[in-house]
Length: 139
Picture 1: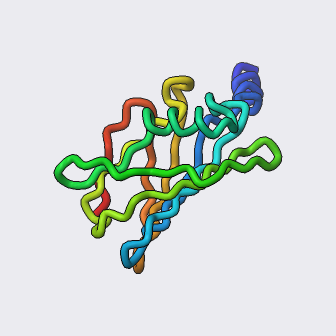
Picture 2: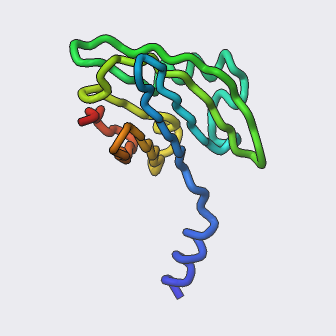
């Protein structure tokens, strides 16, 4: 009986996650980052200026030497309760060695999981971030 109750409780529990994909820019072009998050979970909602402030606090790409890459929110769209954030990431020239930190919504949910797929010519890599995760470097 206890097993059944635990299983039913797990089904009722929402998923706390974001899914993101970064396509590294080539030849000096900026990278394109698309983040998808459930609107009801995402603190700034679809308000562009609030999204920019929130991302600046919770998401970063840092070049070797400590220079933070600039990010520019291009647009926010919504479909079926899911927000899509389209973001341009300044091209560092060399993506290897870039340190990524993704703590989106980790301040809200102890079970938050953020998935970031990085696509570069000849390579795709997936990084996972949870509350308290340390930044991770691209190879």
